[in-house]
Length: 116
Figure 1 (cartoon, rainbow, N blue to C red):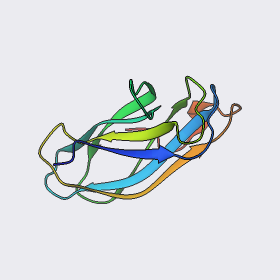
Figure 2: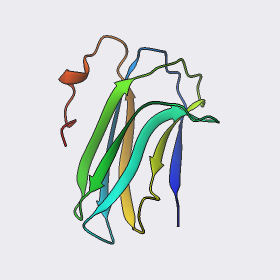
Figure 3: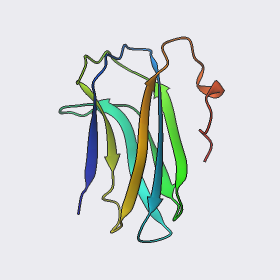
Figure 4: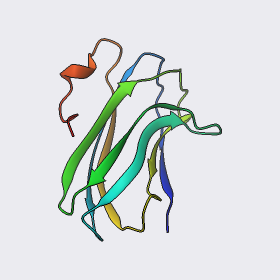
């Protein structure tokens, strides 16, 4: 069983940048699958998150999104998207994952798909 999946981010992120994460997922095993945490985080110990969110995962392909402001500077490869899967025995399929750096002049409330 995979407990977590980490996707390194190859580009530079500056403190204060608005980061938008958009992905597709579906549960293969049950109707109450979940990601206990999806986070933009430091790519090494102590894995400090800049922001995170929990998700309940549907049995059909659905879009999911989270966004937040980077709390620190990250050099290329020093940050990662962490996806925690170990909250339950489950099978989950992940589709395309997009991590977009929108810079410092974007308000969180203007971004799409952030509602539950």
